[in-house]
Image 1 (cartoon, rainbow, N blue to C red):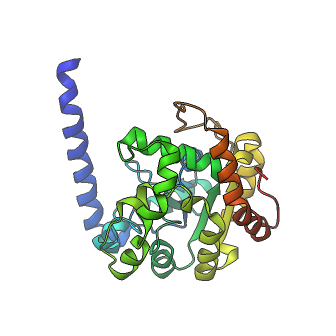
Image 2: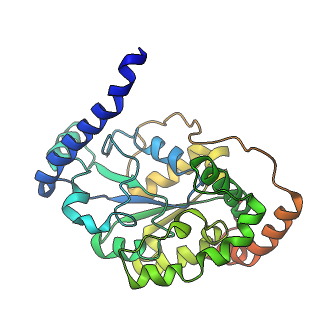
Length: 289
């Protein structure tokens, strides 16, 4: 068994390259996304992605959760992007079988926060619907830090990382706006507070695509009342309920230690004005308030 393990990744990579090559050759015959899960990071996007891909009328590429086209790979062009999605011929067959027009999607939780992502989406996918997930921004920041530590992208403890955030991010957004090819490590991996200012990101997307094309899901509500949240989401997408998926949780990870109460208090105070604006934008209080 051990002798076969080294072959697994090369074979998988070879299969992936083959699929992508075929996809690029047939890109004009492929679907473009009807909707995107655009973020936020560590808010349950992996779980939602897996629930949706089980819907019989939702088609997706089997290889990837997120294509990361509108944030990390925009230079590869729309032909490359469309290569990731199902053939329109496949969609026609599914439509004949179900009597429902199939939809396709992807989930890249950096899209909502990336300074150029929403503008690119609005320009290249007119009419696309956007799904944003939110959770207690204090818990989101702590969870994001733990993830970056696990991945080796963060070496500082949580409290120190928060202290460094402003310095780390200083000028980085301006660089990304000035040079679309510039990749900011800190914007991607060290924006613990900034990514939790959800209302800023939602307001920006609203200016670009309109409020009616944005659907916000509170991750706590998804966890505690998944059928109601799922029903509202299908209504937003214009899809019938053809059966509920199993609502198990995905991509959760244990915390190495609890958050210090002093840090929790400081972050709660920091996010208070942003959460108040978010409540106004949503027209309801988020679950953590």
